[in-house]
Image 1 (spheres, rainbow, N blue to C red):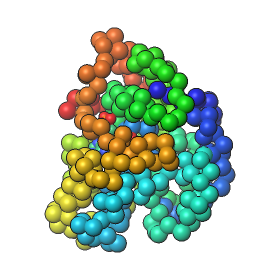
Image 2 (image 1 turned 180 degrees about the vertical axis):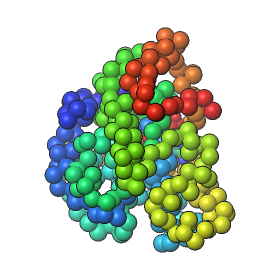
Image 3 (image 1 turned 45 degrees about the horizontal axis):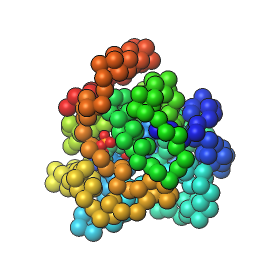
Length: 300
Ligand code: A3P
């Protein structure tokens, strides 16, 4: 369920990535117009990357018929620099400086561990969170399918214990959420804080919020609702899952692209949780996040 983890700067970092995170923090130079998609793993990152890419590039790629999203996976279009540094992908690191503006990048790092150039510059961050029940199940299904990395073997129950103790990649999940949540309250122009469940239930409204946050011409020009609908269709779960480019191949030779598209539902956790697991996770949510103003939608 989790690779070997190391408690580093108050979060659980895969041991293999510690040097890469250090290099990212030391060498990455953010630009004021960069946009970062940030998330705790399995919270809807892939979907948010797709939407952000289409919205931010609307002027460059206005045709939906031969859009880059039809021939590239969202993780290729909006890459994670921390993994480039971790896998020593020098060509990709160098190519970061040639990406066209605005650069769209992503991160799973907790807010306090972001490179200073990200927190101090005017670049923007869009954070997506998801209810901890579905996030756990999504992670369980995802990590048990990654065969190529040396993952210790856990039962669902053992993985759940670790999750409840915050011991998962980039965890604890509660401090991950809180870090970005607090920042979004003090700097709303810097961090837009979204919920996966809201995005699913009123996609039009949230696509407009993303567009507004990015000062996109879609909003400035008051684009017709057809454009917004086309964006939503292009990034929709079934559409993305069915694309040839998302059915084969892998990212960093580690994760098969198809594993990023499983069910895309709210509430699948009900098929995995026992009554005692429900009680335990509900208590932890109350204990760690009660009074924070964060609430969770766990059923569709
Ligand atoms: P499930 O495993 O519950 O199906 P991440 O992108 O952060 O790794 O999160 C993966 C989760 O987002 C998976 O959830 C996946 O199916 C879902 N997902 C991927 N693309 C999606 C889309 N276009 N719309 C809605 N959900 C999507």
